[in-house]
Image (tube, rainbow, N blue to C red; front, side, top):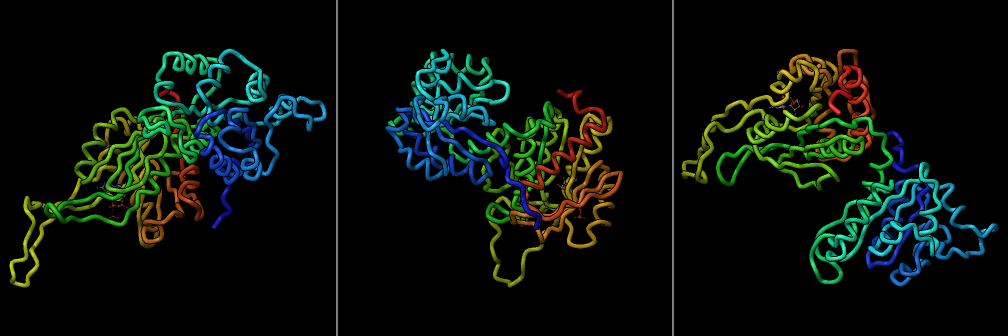
Amino acid sequence: MEAEELELAGKHIVLGLSGGIACYKAAELCRALIKAGATVQVVMTEAAEQFITAVTLQALSGRPVYTSQWDRRESNNMPHINLTREADAIVVAPCSADFIARLLHGSADDLLSLMCLARPMVKVPLLLAPAMNREMFAHPATQRNFAQLAADGATVLGVGSGFQACGETGDGRMLEPEQLLEDIVAFFTPKVLAGQRVLITAGPTYEAIDPVRGITNLSSGKMGFAIARAAREAGADVTLVAGPVSLPTPRGVARIDVKSAKNMLDVVTEEVQQASVFVATAAVADWRPATPSAQKIKKDGSGRAPQLEFTENVDILAAVAQSAAAQLGTLFCVGFAAESHDLLENTQAKRLRKKVPLLVGNIGPDTFGQDHNALLLIDGQGALQLRRASKLSLARRLVQEIATRRRATGVLHSQA
Ligand code: CTP
């Protein structure tokens, strides 16, 4: 397996904590950033120190934590300048309602707000992860402050919804550390698919025999979900049509759950009207029982199994590839080929049969359900092997390859 590149390798993040119960999640975020390859310098407000100690964050980040603008460890006594000049971003998580209000007015009466004000704005982006009670979040003052901070160049990340530490339920929880990491990685990803609307099918389909039984396959959906995540990181507007799988939806991706091949076809037919890229990763069942029984089929005691008749499902990819948009080149189609042998020959033949510009071959038994895969990209020019790696890193490579080919067709920016 190839050594995988860490997503935030070489990035230096200043992680600022303002006061809020979500400080406990900041410890986990600090760890996640470091695991992703970043170096992290933690800065805490006095209020944050009421919720978590600097010792915890020093241990996790491997660096002394800064809490005061009068910190004498800096030889020039200017931590607000020194700490920001080498940063790739300042991430304030949690970002309290009060801290947001202070940022808005350009306050500089503690180290963290001073640093945000003193940062070189072009070089050091500011990302804010709000965390507050639902009433504080919904208050017009807070919403106004978010809008103005965004207009001033800050990136205001989303919030979670649900049970809050105060006992109330609603919007305003800080995003979970994994979600924040996903958003931070996306923030740094070059937007090679900006303006594109990408439609992806993923997972297996389920073809009912009767109300309690059906036919499905071992596809986990992981590759399609990874492509959805990678396409969103690359700036696309992504819709994911998912067969029955229990994977979490990637951040910022619109998901439509379906069951059967027929459901998937109906949803794709509708959604593809708005798409500029279609990626079919789903392991769509080739056949479905011709007449599923409305009632559970019972054993009749004869010892004989019921005889099932099958009908072929529509080939969704081939149908989309024959649409006017695909023919005109305003819709770029990418298919997958799950093979068990002769990968190159079978993928080449399938590409011609389905009439798609790019078909991605993989060996089904080597990938179904696994976190890793190897891909063989076949297009009109030839073959490109992507060696075994995590599905997410392969998905990111594939997204780049799609963007390059899309650009070559000259329609990449016409959709924007
Ligand atoms: N596909 C589809 N609709 C179907 C069958 C397949 O959209 N009814 C798509 C898959 O999502 C994939 C590609 O077609 O992108 C190839 O799927 P695969 O299962 O490898 O090929 P089949 O067309 O089923 O051919 P075969 O089973 O003969 O290999």
